[in-house]
Image 1 (cartoon, one colour):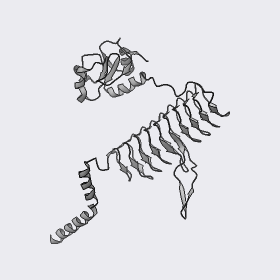
Image 2 (cartoon, helix red, strand yellow):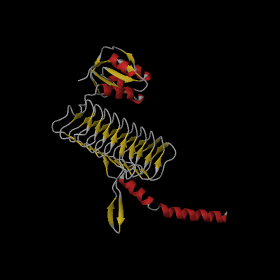
Image 3 (tube, helix red, strand yellow):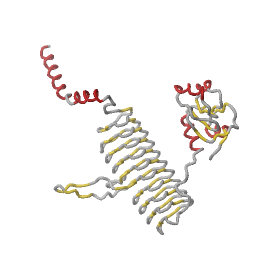
Image 4 (cartoon, helix red, strand yellow):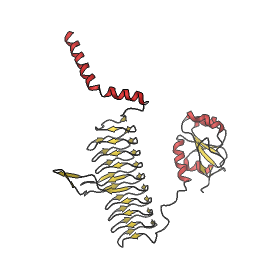
Length: 341
């Protein structure tokens, strides 16, 4: 268990301390559950009413919310960011491995940096390069000539295909596959002829990828995930997709081949993207969106029909099926009015 004083937390967060700096904090909890030795936060003033009964040893909050809490407080402009940083300081998540396991296979010509740990039954193939302090979890497979940068962590059972590169300080959760074949086939009179995928996957620095996500290698050029991107669980990133810097992609999103997504985009969960098009920088897309055309202007986009009671939805669906007929009838009425006018 990690223990840190409020004074130390204030210093590390750049926060303004109000109260007893010697109080020790060992964990974080919600405002309604937190007790002695725990810190909590509110990032939205509509929750300030919870502060009256809050039993936390300290609260991270904005200056405007401080009068509503009588206990120890760390005042900062962005308490949610403070929460993230405190969570990092108090994080007790174990390493993916603690040493180089005897059951791990490491090719003789693999380059293994200082401080590297490799879990049980992991396979490191010929020509692989592992930077300093890389963590390879149990059961991982790292294919020929793959290159993994310093401080990158692979949890158990991650598969990294041949010639895939990952930058520094990346995190890949269990079950993810990097560099599998893209969906490339030619049709010969009804028979599918496989097109070998000759590109690879290039992942930048500080990229985090969730569990059971697949990122396919390129057909000729590479699939590219740029610095700082974050990708949630169970996403499908097809061959030759390019994801811009600091773009966030929520779970179960599907991206077809040769899609380009710009920088600083926010993609809602279960969204589907057509291939061979471009999404510009600064786009936010609501969950379950179906993106079939390029987006050239930053902004917030949505699609789909929100949830309705089934009886209402059936009526809506029936009306949607008649839109073309209604459009034709409306055009006919407009033409008649124009003719009479």
